[in-house]
Image (cartoon, rainbow, N blue to C red; front, top):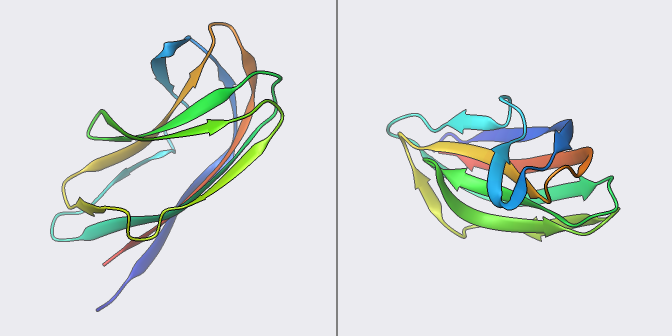
Length: 115
């Protein structure tokens, strides 16, 4: 079985729109899982430069799948190996939740494998 490693990663500025309104972080933090392929998330790492709690939301087809809170001026590492298979045809995206007007930068590293 051939596997392919994928990463959604980078450092991105953000501005919060409210704790109940997830906003896209960057268009580069989206991935379409090809038909006939299974995607598995392996880990999530994130860092937050601002002095407020933020949350990264892993969305699948526009629906929240996992929440990753990141404390003020802090980081998080969450192993996800074999948590859930994501079927082909799905879109995976990372969104952000933060209090309205909160600004900063977020470091994102979502590791995945497809087979």
